[in-house]
Every structure is written in C-alpha cells, then in structure tokens.
Image (cartoon, rainbow, N blue to C red; front, top):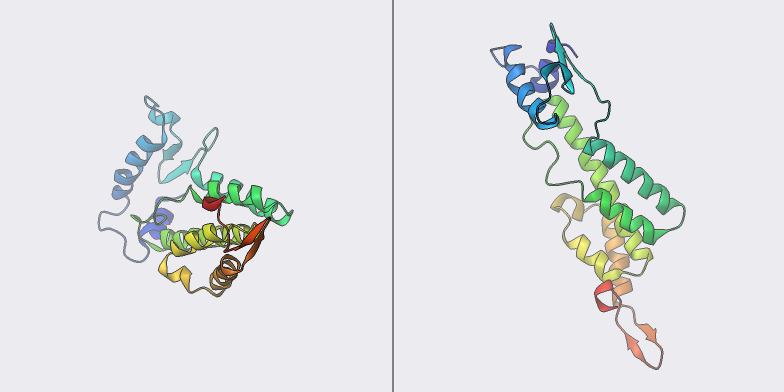
Length: 189
C-alpha cells in the first residue's frame, strides 16, 4: 500500500503536517508488537520499500481471522440445528472482543472497520441469545441481555429474544412429582 493511500485511509482529508514521515512512527511500534523478538527489519511481517508498506501474512494468525473463522463456524453450527454447540462456539468467538474495536484509531478506514466489527459482534450476540432461548436457558439469556450495550438493548431482534426469554422464564414448567416451578437457567440445574 502506498504511503499516500495509508495517509488517506488513516487520516482522511486531514493528514498530519509531517506527511509520510509520520508513518514510520506508527509502523515501527506495530512491527515490534507483531514480530517475534529479534526479528530483523527485512523479515518483519510489515515490509517496506520506497513509498510503500506491505503485510506478509505467511504463518501469521490475526485475531480478526480467528473471529471470522469462529463466528462463521458457529453460525453454520446453529443453522445445522445444534444450538448447544453453537452457543459454546459463539461464546468463544465473542470472547475475542475486548472493548470497542480499534478504539484508539481515528480516520475513515478505522471508523468503517470499527462499524463493521461492531455489527459482527451484534450478529454473534443475537445468535447466541437465540441459542440460549432455544435451549430453554432463559436465565442465562436474560443475564446476557442485561449486559448488552445501550444501543443494542432497543434493537427489535434483541427485544424479541428478551421477551421470549422472559416468557420462558416466567412460564410454569412441570416437575416430576412436584408442583410447577418458574423458568430455568444453568444456575438452577
């Protein structure tokens, strides 16, 4: 990727006054983070030349690739009719999120990628809640719904799942040899 493309993607219409010189001050710490200790500059996962940078992704695992792989597998498992396994896979995928994605980065590229990742997290959360409700784990679903970000709490799909969980939790369920009890959760099993 050319220096100009990077400047435009990161800073948009307001690039730093130092121009392309500022790129090295951002790329070098990134190299130190991504490379193994003792890696020579010429063997870094971020290669450079006159006016360009390039990622060399041989033998490199990115958390974004893991998220894509785990999330896609979980959604396929859910679609195949195995909500218990899908719920666990979705839990694993969601664990890759730690805070807001790309929170320290500004610019149009980071903003668009952040929005895409937030939508992906919302999709995976919705799928997990659906699995919990389908499994009758209403208490767990309600606990998860209570921890949703403010913006997601009023999403129609999330509200519908929360209502199903509330209904399932409040509905009497028969117990062998005893009176009905209120809904179930993994904590009461």
